[in-house]
Length: 175
Image (cartoon, rainbow, N blue to C red; front, side, top):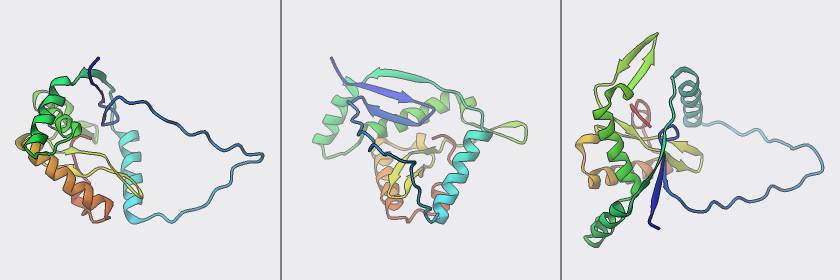
């Protein structure tokens, strides 16, 4: 049957399709209770940027299922040479080249005008103990798959340790 990759440009997510296991919520006899949590500076910035992106930036959505058997073969060969790359690394590289071919997608809308970004700087989602953050792989098209992979691993490590600098997660041109 082969491996398939579901790409959702709107969410910036790529994953090999696998069954999703959802736990059942606990049944309660009364209304839910809530607990106020302290908001760190980084979480406040993330919340502000996500809110801005959804409310001020025009959105379009596209999804496609792609057969990735050849990509999986290539990954296996690279891994045999001790080069560790993920499917997401390939998606990041492909997105960067798609943005070069379709530069009108690599734009911002600001002050009533469209501004085309000069560079392709792809932000990638990283799960951290405090939530998602999107560090940036700068000048993505110029990097090899191995360089992208190493860059993402380094940024993900810094993100999980809370050591990203603002310029490492603010200002990407595509997520």
